[in-house]
Length: 268
Image (cartoon, rainbow, N blue to C red; front, top):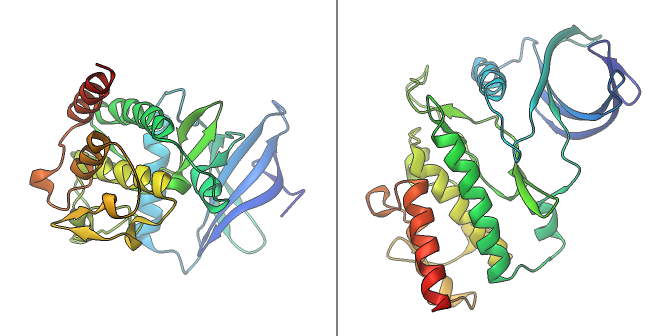
């Protein structure tokens, strides 16, 4: 599709990703001369109604968001292509590399790096969770975070859910294995589910390993067996990623308070 014009103004430069019925494209806006990301959903006979529902929800949620670490919504359009009619979501392009890209290249992160990363990500989640209604990302993982200008940027809102909305089906499981808590396997997601995703992402960042491959003990990641971290950070990460929702940190405010308190204690 390189060179093709979409929406009468976006010249496709390259394909960034491809899934069944969905493409992610890098393009140049011929009006502003800025690079953009276009998510395309094919409206053909193979379209899963659930995919359409999630795509439309992503568009509506992104329209309502404004945060420096979330690529802003720019446009939405429909177009007839030779193979199918498509609907497309346009967002600003963040010119960085995903955290997963860095992990794949064996980049190492220090405990100080992880703490700084955690603080920025928690502030992003604080913004989302304080929205009205609260926004649950549901798929926080290394490939959904772009590192740019020394800060993480949260992308890929394809699994997003509004806290008070009712799913249209009795069972909707979204997310990525290894980074989602047990409650999401039964189609349930709460604000603390995003904390689990962030905690698992930080564990991948510090260990260089997929959380799914790490040992567990009593419902917690056995981090002492795989990485050398300060006890207070290990405790916090285990609290963030408790398998039991009742024992997990429940809110961003609580997670921030505990992380800051333990950082202060370490400096004393």
